[in-house]
Length: 58
Image 1 (tube, rainbow, N blue to C red):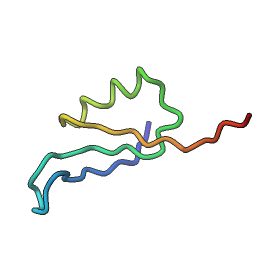
Image 2: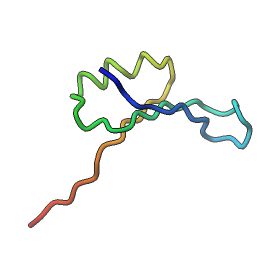
Image 3: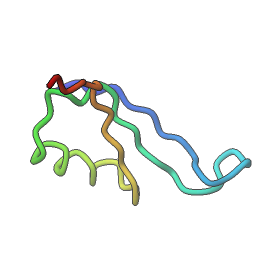
């Protein structure tokens, strides 16, 4: 499985300071179990999964 991701520093103005955050892009096809398996691979306290926005129609 190939995933596109970025590691970003948050809560800082200094490069390589603050808290590292893994952001996994295009995660729509991942199950909850897969997300939970991927997150520890980054060895980071925070991992976010970006999903495509959808609108609910009434």
